[in-house]
Image (cartoon, rainbow, N blue to C red; front, side, top):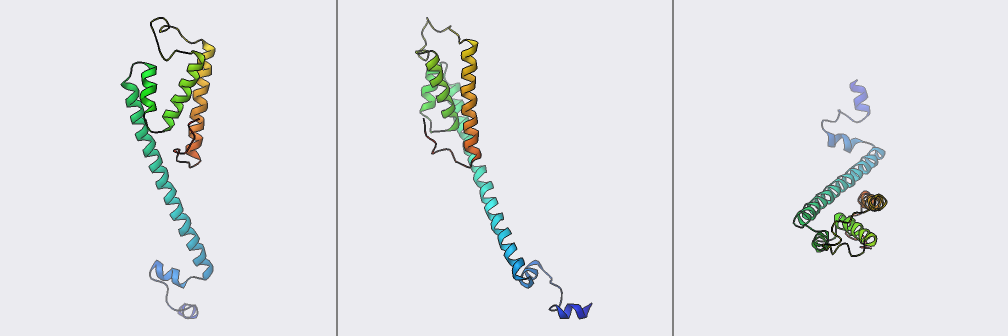
Length: 152
């Protein structure tokens, strides 16, 4: 056995660095590629963590503003003062569609306060919200940070 060890360059490596230093160029290239992809993976993991943390804070602010208001018009105004976020964009699209269904409904008065949407209108509004939620999910999944998306 010692004859074989002497032929391949001496004693067995005693630590990982020694093993790497004694490895062939092909193995060193593979290890460099693996290390590079590991660093990239950790960077992406950190970036996604930061993105979800930021969106979570935006959600807290969004829902706090909604809870402070009693009317849709007041909620819309309060939320539109917040920085751009997925929640703000979804609400904006929903309110815009609702305003098309019921022009003037945001400025509720005593006469139109009890009017309701038809089942067809509610389903259409649900579909608008579902489309916007899907668009926001796709935006976050594509690794976009979301702050550059147009306000439409």
